[in-house]
Length: 206
Image (cartoon, rainbow, N blue to C red; front, side, top):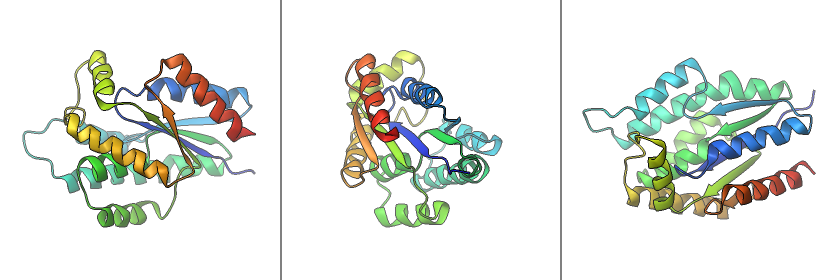
């Protein structure tokens, strides 16, 4: 049986990930490909419990290392229980975030040093990475304004503009050095974003 592919959609809050994930799913289904959707943190019962823990506004300071380790704990659960089994069945997995989020949010935004990030990622994932990542690039102020329009922000979304500026800078830096990461201009109107994503997918599918 042919091994499946893992496609991930990344971006700051308000970048339009949910809409693009739906487009990717439908494009793959139209091409006759079986698709499974995942999200991070979350995607399994234990990982969803960790998600609630991470996003909760605790009445205490949450250390950067605590947040990082919780993210990777949820990621390993999802990888072992859903992503790898689906890929082995020949199913394509479309993920709402993966390791790049930790590299950008905890590494860039929170300032966790690169050696720590690399060590934890290697222990947790053993070098596993997506086949294709679509990074939806949006200016933080615009993204946060869109996110606020959806309702109350969670603990991470309340981190402030400077945090998201650092996160975006890390995303872009990582994309420059990895050909599997494609940057999509998410400042455009959603129909134009969809056209760009469809073009990328058609090229990828050959």
